[in-house]
Length: 579
Image (cartoon, rainbow, N blue to C red):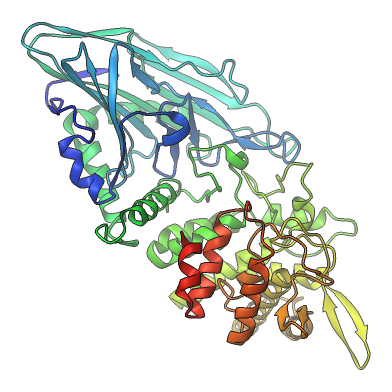
C-alpha cells in the first residue's frame, strides 16, 4: 500500500550541478548522473534478473514471460503495465542518477522552489525478487504544508499481451490477474500473471515542518514460478510492505548487490573515468538482467528492453557469458541451465527440416520454450546454425574451469545431441585420394553472407565434435548407445577449414572474394575459440578482414579486433579499436 513514514527524511542539497552527496560516487563511476532526464539519452533501468523496468516507462517485463506464436507473431516479451511510472507534476527535476552499486535510480526535484523531493526506484535483489519499489521522500518547510500532485504515466491500452481482470481492489491496493493471449507453441499453455500494486493518489499533503516518505510497491507472480500466483502475489506484497517499513528490504537489497560488486572488473577512475563508467554500467545491466535462481538467460537488449523481442541469441553464450564465467559462475550456470531445460525445442528444430536432421539443433532465436522464434522474414533462423556449437563451447569452458565431471554428465544429452546434429548435417565429399566433410548452405556470423563451409561454423562444429567424442570415451560403459566417438573424430579431423594459401589467411567461407562483411567473423577464431594458428596467420586474418568490415556494423566487432592486436603485441592498433 502507499504508506507514509517519518523515518527517512529527504536530504537537503544545493542546486549545484552534481549534488554534494553524489559527487564521490560520480567521480568513482559508481553513479551515472544527469542534470536532466531525457529518455532518449538516459534510458536508465532497474532490475533484478526476474523483473525489470526502464524508469519512467509504462512497462515492466518479467523474464520468461512471452506472448506470441513462435516465429509468426513472433513470440516477444509480454508487456505488463507499470503502476510505478510516477511523476510529481508540480515539481521541477534538477538531478537524476542511476546508482550502479545500489542498483537504484534517483530523481531529485523541488516543489515551489524550496521543498526538496527525492524519488527512488529499485527492484529487490535478495528477499523478494517479485517486488519493485518506489519511494518518494519530501521535507516540508516550517512555513507551511506542501501538496504533491502525483500521476502515473499512462500505458498503451488495451494491453495487447495480457488480459488483466481485477481480482481485488481497495482504496490503496489493486490486485489483477490475466493470461498471455497467444502461446509460443500452437495449443501450448498460456502464462498466468498476477500483480498487486499500490494505488497512487492524485495528490498528497505533507504537514508543515515534517519529513515523510511515500512508498509504492508492485509485486508480480506468474504460473512459471507459482502454483497459485494470486495467493502468492498477495503474500509477497504484504511481506514487502512490512519489510519496506522496517528498512529490511532495502538493506538486504544493497547487501546483495554489494556482494555482486565484490567480483568483476575495477578500473582506476584517476586513469580513465570514461572507461570506468563503461565497464561499471555494462556490468550493471548484465547483472540486473540475470540471476542464479531464475534460469531464463539474457537477450541483447537486457531484461528492461523488448529489443529483438527479448530473445536469447549467441550474444549470451559468446559475448556475455565469458565475464559471467570468470567472475560470476552461478550466473553463467543459469544461462546454460536455460539451454538444458529447452532440449525438447532444440530437437524439434532439427526435425523441422526436409529431410529432418537428427540430434539437437538450437534455434537462432530462443524465447520461452526453446523452439525457433526468429521472425519468418529473417533467413538467420534457417541457416545461422553455428549457435549449437557456440552453446557446447560454453559448456566446455565451464567444465574446463571447474573440472566438475559430475556436472558435465548432467549436460551429456546436450553435448552428445549437438554432435549427433553435426553428424547428420555434414556431407561426405570425395576428393582425389580421400574425402572430407562439408557443411553447406549456412549464414556465418557475417550475416551479409550465405555460403558453404563458413570457417567459424566449421571450427566451432569441430571443437564441439571433439569435446563430445572425449565425453563419450570418458563415460565408458555408462555412455548411451547409438553414438560413435570414432565417427565424430573422423568428421572433426576431416571437416573442411577454408584457407587461402596465397594470402595465408582463413577464408570466411568457400569462394570468399573480399566482399564487405557485417561484423566480427574470422577474427573470432583467435578469441574466443582459441583456434591453433601461427602468429602470422592471426595477424593476416586481423589485417585482411578489418579492412573489409562495415564501419557501421555492430560495435562489439571492434573489441574482437582489439583483442587480436593485443595478442599480437600491437597496442597502437588495439587502443583506438577498443575505444
